[in-house]
Amino acid sequence: MTTVHHGGTGSPVDVHDPKLTRFDIVKEGLRRDDIEIVTYESQFQGANSKAEKRMVRSISLLFLISGLFALAFLVFYIVWPWKFEMGHTRSDYYTPILGITLGISLFALGIAILAWAKKLLPHELSIQQRHGDPSSDEDRLITGQTAMYVADELGVQRRPLLKGAIALGMAPLGLAAAAPLVGGLIKNPHGDPEPMMYRTGFNPVPNGNKPVRLSREDGSPIRPEDVSAGGQLTVYPGIPGGATNKYADSPTLLIHLRDDDAQKARTAAEGDKNGRNKGSMWGNYVAYSKICTHAGCPASLYEQQTNRLLCPCHQSQFNIVDNAQPIFGPATRRLPMLPLSVDDEGFFVATSDFKDTVGPDFWERP
Image (cartoon, rainbow, N blue to C red; front, side, top):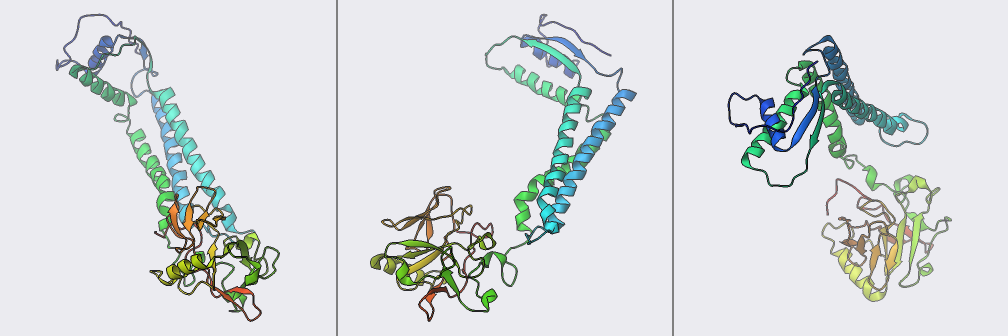
């Protein structure tokens, strides 16, 4: 075991002397910085000893375990069924499997780094006096050489097993870190003939292709006279379970606009540039999804005087008389409008499902 003891005094050394080793320059930098190395010792009896090789193999195994479980995270992230289904299905294990595999990967990585620092790096004890003078060019050279010396002492270059283990272990972990950022781009959620994120409880197809009535939480249908001018009412699909979590994407805000405001809203809807809101109002009534397009919170705070709909979670605001376009806050996409009509019995119905995506959606743009 090699131990180095030296003090912080002595004659200045020319750091540009080619005969100096990197450690000599490091020691000179320490001396100039009033740092005394009390102890600097290797943890092994000679380089490449059996004890050192055994420790290198153990740490390399930890890096490989980290990479293996990071790779497992990626595989499960891509191939495991993730769509929610009612009942006890394999999709129930999707999130736990991701948590377990990524957790073991990060745990193994942390233990590997700790073991490297505690078991492979030399033990050093140094004492430094504080001073705040600016650094000279030579000081910067010394700092650079010190950093290079520390890299040398890590021992990666002379320990190829560790180098390979780090490469194999960190590559899958890096991909695992990027997976949540790009994973949502693997499959377009709107690629199906009937995109999942366009279907709510107001879809007439499951209702025998009949328009779905708007109902209260108790299931009772709603007539136009039930909502006074300037008022609003939260409505649900008038189907079995329409007000339950089974149709959590369906709560809608039915608003009875005053004449002037209704005319502005109708003009904006008829002039909708993509045409999806055209013909969606009935009289002075308009209905918008209650699910905020930012993070899915209930956007239900209606300001009658300003015709703004506010989301209490992150303060997004939507202009009711302009196709519910966002005018403040983090939301970048308008609230979907539900096409309205009245059936033969005088109750509100949805002539179709929402024509815009309900709630947050990464595939949409303003």
